Image (tube, rainbow, N blue to C red):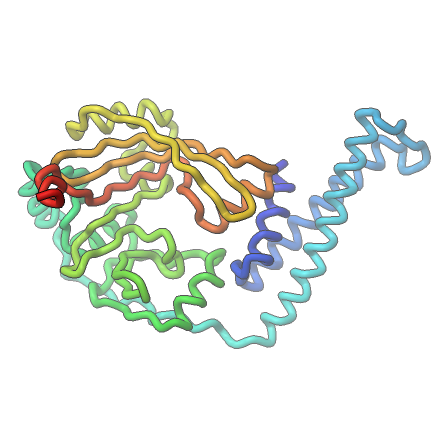
Length: 320
């Protein structure tokens, strides 16, 4: 199943216009495909005694050989495309990307955390993060927690070409630092080239209006990688005074396929919504599920999102 998922993923990336791979990544994938090819050849040879004895149609052995044959064909097809792509990359210029991060040595984690404490009465504050937080503080604090390089808080304005390159480079290893970017739509804090699901979206005053923690970073911050989702939600709620977590179901669609995702959330009168995203279910085959994931529809399971909403007084004023 793992091999099949990998094959589907590369296929979706190729057909959707994403997935510019490096030569090292292609070579690694080619080696994986060779392993898949050899393993499935062994499956067929085992059931057919090196292709000397036919299997009975409709039997368990028959379907095992059929699936193995499909995987072999898919692996051969993907390998051919990867070899062609490898040749193209060898003769192509390096993609345009924003300049590398400029080191920043002016950061005091205790000062940033102290500033956060001053906002506890007005909004949710955890690990020093809060809505309305100045972008440089959030950027530096996240780099600090993850052991990344502290970088300049200068805004990097992206060209249209660079934004397009970020989509093509999605399979590349992201930079080991968070930077502040200006895209055609928003100011964001993100790791190049992962711009479509940024750490934070900023308002006009360069302060946080939405904050996203993907599982790998949430687990590092809270050391909760092995904790079941319901236990994590309960522990987080108790630690940060969240009372009343509800559940809703989000509908997902990529025009061809549909699905749903469970969201556990709390809407506060203080003007924020905190949510944890649960399991995503797609009404279709594995390829449909992988395609939605690659296209960024819904969220990765265990993603945490904090965003601004209207307070009751703000909402009421809309009807005055």
